[in-house]
Image (cartoon, rainbow, N blue to C red; front, side, top):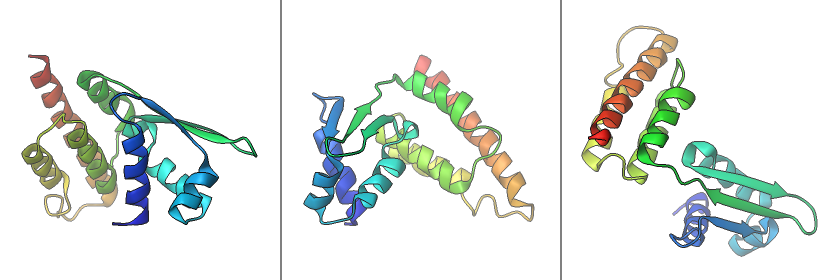
Length: 156
């Protein structure tokens, strides 16, 4: 397991079902994992962002801390945020796959649905001779369409 994965799992374990918030000391966490504090920053920036359903707040200095808060949203709120705020007019394959993984992680889609969505927006499906900007625009529209379908299904 990579160090980033270990740090992420450690923090998520601290954010148990009982607690939607955790406060950590960056230097203590870095010392625990035997890494530089910048590695902790990397994990926070890439795995505990608002797109992943978290808010982070930090204060540097001797008494500094990192506070991570899990934002509790309903499935429909999360889907509407993704459709209206996150996706936009263009979406890279990497960004789309990250969003799909989050949907699975939050049990909004099943494993089969995740795999189908990933196949639909993947490089094999988009293997047509058009510029990447057009592929990304198509990918964004496809993701929005899939999310609208999931939102409609979840309403009933």
